[in-house]
Structure formats: structure tokens, C-alpha cells
Image 1: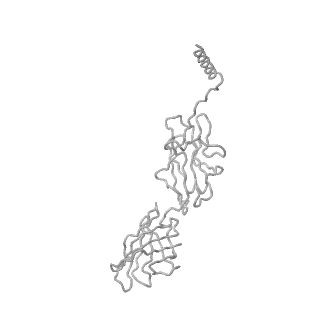
Image 2: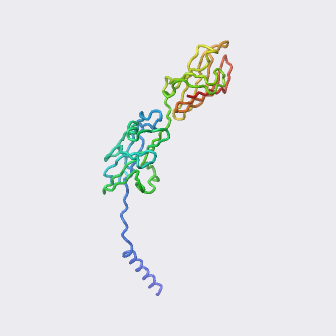
Image 3: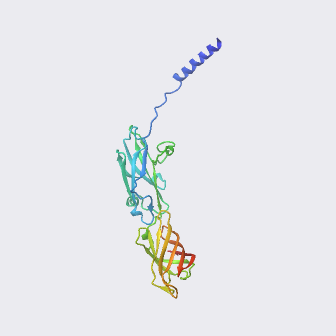
Amino acid sequence: MKYIIAIFVSAVLFSACQKEDNPKLPDLVRVPLPLITLDPASDAAISSQDVAGFNGKFIVDLYFKNDVPPQKFDVVAVKNDDPSSVIKIKEGITTFPTIVEFSGADILAAFGDAKEGDKFTVGADVYMSNGQKLEAFPLTGTNYGASILGQPGSSPFIDLLVQCVFNKNTFNGDYTITQDDWNDFDLGANISVKPGSGDNQISITAYPAPKYGKNRKPLIVDVDPATSIATVSEQVIGDYDGAPPGATIRGSGNVNPCGDKITLTLTFNIGGDEYPDNVLVLEK
């Protein structure tokens, strides 16, 4: 019997403690979290060679689509994670999804410059239905809450990097030969490089060197803009003196997307005889 009484007393005390000593738990508030993604029509990165030409477009939406919506979003951006540099891109967004544009001209006007290695981050200040404002890039404290980036499929921010982006028009002018395993040219000699006719082609006027041949044709190089890998499909480049006409070249290599270096490993075919593994390096 004494054990039953003890259990009863403990239950009463526990109940009293719950009712009288604990404060009422606050209601949980779900933040109308921004979902910001890159529009398919947007450039994925900012070209350091042509910042003004950047075409940025973002889709601003709600992560929790069925929850209470915000009063509004203000889309903002910072440079190199510095919250003191925050600028507003578009204010008062109340319709979701909405497409927001952010051009290279906007970046230069707001931040003054953008050089290779810089990063611009786009986010949104949230104005909740109760009037509370949650900043994307607060000077102190945290933004929307802990572990927001851990939400499956969440994307409250977008990073835009300033980097060299392949553009065939960057490859234009005289380049210096720093390696020529075929030995047609002296090191330090210059040869002409121009944009090719294709979207991702460059044209090199190289072999045969004038002192060794004639009927010279430009060497056409195809570049994968995503990887900077260069491919030289087999093609006629000209006639070497004293050899069967129609010498051909094929090969592969890579380019620096900044436009200042081209490296190719080439196989020459003259009259049916092949000469592989000839490295050509051009620098600007």
C-alpha cells in the first residue's frame, strides 16, 4: 500500500510542477524561406574579361510554398561575404515565383569593380507576416535560422564567381612561341591567332613556317568552353618544300580561358609518314 501512495504523490507533484513552474512554450514560427535559383537563360559565371556583358537572371520563390507567405522579399547582394557591402537589387517582391535580373552593368554601378576571384552572393531580406524583418546578410548574428542550408533542396543564396570564361574573341593578336617541338620556329617568334568562324573555334596561322613551306592554311582549333580542352581535327595546313603536298595536322591540348596561353600536342602527317607528340605552346 505504501508503494501505491508514493506513486500517487509523485504523480501529483509532477503534475503540479508542469502546471505551475514551467513557462508556456512559445508557438513555433516557420520562416518563409527564400528559394533562389539560377534561371536557365542566365550566365552561370561572371567573365573577368567582360564583366559588363554578364547577364544574370534569378528565379525568386518560396521554399515552403503552402505556409503563410511573407509580406515581401527584398532581393539583395554582397561582395566577398562582406555584410557592410550589401546592396538592394529589387524591393517589394510579393508574387512567387518572380524573375529578377542582375546585370554586369548593375554590378559595376553598385560595387565599382569586379575582378577575377571576386564573389557576389545574392539573397533576400524576409519581411514576415508579423512585421519582423530577417536580413540575408546581417552585420551581427545569424540570418534566417540554424541549419537552413541543410533543408533538402534549399537554395536561399546564389554565389556568382568572377572568373575567366572562354570567349573566342579573347584569342586575338600576336602570340609568342615558348615551345615548338617541330622546330619550324625560333623560340620567341610571334604568330597570329584569331577567332575562328565557329562559336568555340580559334584560328592559328603557324605551320609550315614561311621559310619551310607555302600554301599555308590556318590551323583551326575547337575548344570545349566548359573544360577548356582543345581538339584539332585532322586538316591540311599547307605544303612543305621538297615534300609531298598537303601536309596535315591533328591533335589535342588545352587553352587558358583567360586567353593568354594555348598548349597543343600535334601529330604531323607528310606524304603518309606520321610524326607524333610535337608540343606547341603559345603565350600572350
